Image (tube, rainbow over all chains, first blue to last red; front, side):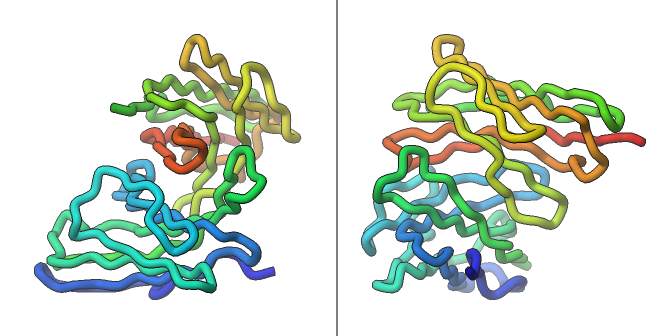
Length: 115
Length: 110
């Protein structure tokens, strides 16, 4: 049973560029959440996708957008990159239907460096 | 807004018991989760409390008091492999929104 996978593992971009990160959820999961984790800090919730729609959003600007596909995989897009966007981007999958607490399974993350 | 507080660092010796506290301020509280993250790794789920009381899972236990907006993670029979960062996370909006605390770095000494 494959867990959550993310690609790429590492990425280097320059300011102003755009980036797309990808996530495949754990088999059987229908919900994908994205987080940004700066070094030494806790993950910060960006948004959550369910049934191909953004269901909830954290305190992130519109430069951060996403998409969920019919197979439940998801993409995170960041436009006009800033130096402060350098972080570990984590994808977490969960099952909404019938869940009382939405245990999340995290992928290994994508380390984004903006120069 | 939503905020969580945890101690930044805790140190203990192998075989000991350690308690990591978490206090929170949030609207629409649904439950409190705990996650473990080793350096360079992804967070892994440890436990969840939606109701007041103690939940036990092996060497780990988690407690919640909704009236006090407080919870803790209790780790017993500490092992070297327990050295990691531990995060509490509040779930709100019927499980649709997660807010993580700043994390507690646990160092287990021989």
